[in-house]
Image (tube, rainbow, N blue to C red; front, side, top):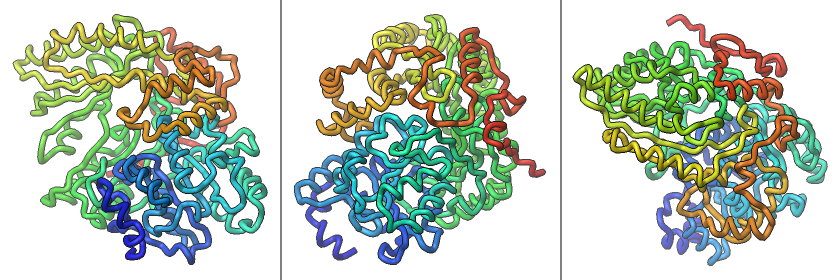
Length: 593
């Protein structure tokens, strides 16, 4: 550490927040680099305070470091000031714990969490002294692998990533390291060929249909401690995953379709993991993580038991947004016994027709009853999530967002209740691979702006509501990148060469640069984002098998056109194909509490 501080003293003293770059956090593994048989650095292409909170990174970091022969280090995208200083003093990016240059590791594993981080990955490779293009790497360079939501369409990043990990990573990452440990004296070509044979690994050099990996979450694979940030991170709390997958199958949601089947963690394990995590870290808050946490069979009883355990300690629970059809005032009270803050509900659409189109399986009555229950019990702040620009949306559906809030206000007044303060987070629909809406084009920016103004025209009627809109320009880029083919790699490469970096933060995006690069390459990304594909077309992501029957996805798309629901697979099998095709099954917590 002292040698590192001497070498990087000028850089650390000249940058903002040097604590992002010094490592040595409480509970970091700090395994010895020199004695490990295989060394991997998990690299998150965003700022330290974002990456250190990512639960997927925590899981893989824990699993690799639990192996006696392997070591895992971490790296995060430096802010621009630190990057400039590295360039000025001719220094490379390094593992946060080992302080070893990243190009000395056997593997660099990148998180593909969102499309706007693609150019950041390339810049981090450059500053690690690793060739950005995979064809230019030799036997001495680390193997670059990547996993996460964006890996389900590997095509845009095929020129830069050696291996894509498709699906759950807990088992496959160890299989990769085990295989590598046995064949690491072979050539890079031979190693990649062997690793490409592992189920769940897609290798662009040896392309083949690749089936996702499914892991049944167990207690051993779940961390009960993780490095504690030197300063506040975005999710500064203990995290326990209680459920993987979601059977709701909202037609816009990629995670619901790519993470099937539903697998619930046992109640006793959840309680044990939570208690150990809080005890080990000293956190005063824990989060019970899932795509739909209040769908867990025993969620109320779990939180009751945890509240009893943490009684008088000041330790609180956090849950993601509640499903209005399963809203429980008891659960809300259990979550916020000390302080009534904000209840979050995700209707996604304002009209019943639109909620049927997206398969939300949620009625206006359920939404209003959930809000009224909150207000009666003392909650004064409600947060809603909505999406505009959805397939088959009409103006009346957009205006229905305001009508829904008006109906809530009417019912509150009718009961003599104080109107809640409502915040609406309104995002723009982005068509995602492996969903029933993957074929449907996005609304143009002009159309989204028109719909935005249409909704804002009703703002005087809902004065207790604040409307926050996501940028349609960013959403357009996301839509282009997420459905892109291999040619999109040229676009990403040119953006990187022209300085694009940390574009997951909108203030860093140079929209004029995007236009110039697109013109140079004769790409019309606005047209590509709004393009509707024919369901008979071959798609760039067809090479990845999530277990879903393509005809089932097409049928769901057609049902959406008719505004017809599909019963959630938690109620009745929807015949999507995952369980039969991948020889797996749903797992629910049958614990009697």
